[in-house]
Each structure stands twice: as C-alpha cells, then as structure tokens.
Length: 116
Image 1 (cartoon, helix red, strand yellow):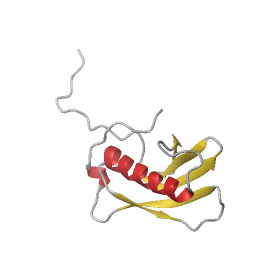
Image 2 (image 1 turned 90 degrees about the horizontal axis):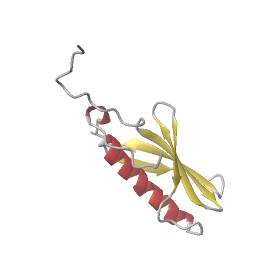
Image 3 (image 1 turned 45 degrees about the vertical axis):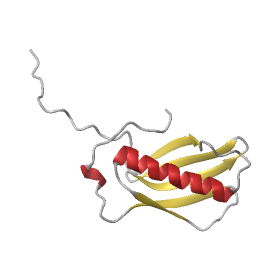
C-alpha cells in the first residue's frame, strides 16, 4: 500500500519569474514574450484589449500592466518594468525587476494567466 503524504505539496509556478519583456508590433496585433530568470522564454501571445493600430505608448503601457498582474498573480510579488532605448520601430524590450523587499521564492503560486 502506498504511503500518503500528510502535508500538501507546495505548488510550483508554471514558469520562473520574468526578468525581461519583449513587445512586437505585427500586422495582426501587438504580441509579447517574457524572458525568465532561469533563461526560459514564455510566449504571451497577443496583448489583450490593444488594437493592432494602437499607438506604441498605449501598447507599452498595457504590456507593463499585464506583466505586473502576471507577477502578482503567479509569483505573488510586485515588479517594475523599465523600457530599454528604442532600437527598432517595431519592437521594444524591457527589464522586469522585483521591487525591493519582495521575496517571490517564499510565496505560493496561482494558475498561469497566459493562454496555453
């Protein structure tokens, strides 16, 4: 007979904490991807609620809110997003930084809000 554990296992997040954000303007709309602290990439797909012809500033603001919500929901931590200088008119990249005093390793996770 198999032995059952009495303590529930701590659920791991579906992916590591983001440390970078990439935003792309495509003919079909704005798309975003995350670079994680363990070197992985998570494709976030289309940026919801932002039309393809939206101003880049509007898309960047929506992407920041999206990443902050993701970090809060999945990793229970607050992050700041700092955009890099623009090199290409159709793509933007940013650094995602944990706000001082937060320790995401101690917090339980929630389901991933990005579609699979």
